[in-house]
Length: 172
Image 1 (cartoon, rainbow, N blue to C red):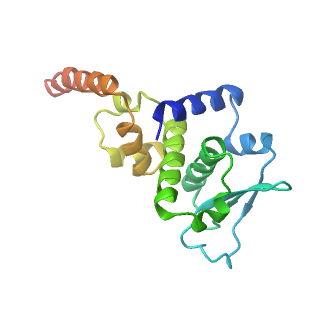
Image 2: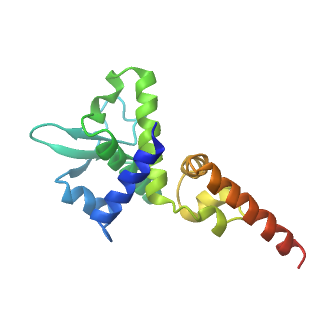
Image 3: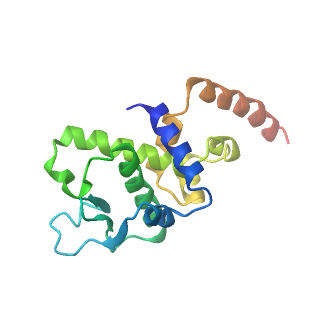
């Protein structure tokens, strides 16, 4: 996985669709947004997928998503659109499971980079990953991915920031 490439794609998407919601971005890309039928054989495994054919571009979502999951899944699917433009995730279950895991990690990484700013760990330095996720209404998985994908320099900067501020906060 090339984190620099994904970060650059996120930057370009945000730049070209500045101020727009994820749904508006999908509409700009001529995607229809709908729901997976309860008869879809993988309904319990899938929270969403996208279909790209010559005649249709659509994002299909599981009906049982809460609002926070909806935003995260839509952003994940947008990651597939930008990072895997030639893959129809509606048929992803037919692909090699190892490759699927790789594709899903890249789409999750796109979502973590899109939804979470680089400064969240400074802003919420007093909170653990679970509490940051709760505060920002995203999954813990995305918060962990965001941290794991920080550069070595950024992690070092955070550690120094934490050390400086932690001792100050606990001396009060």
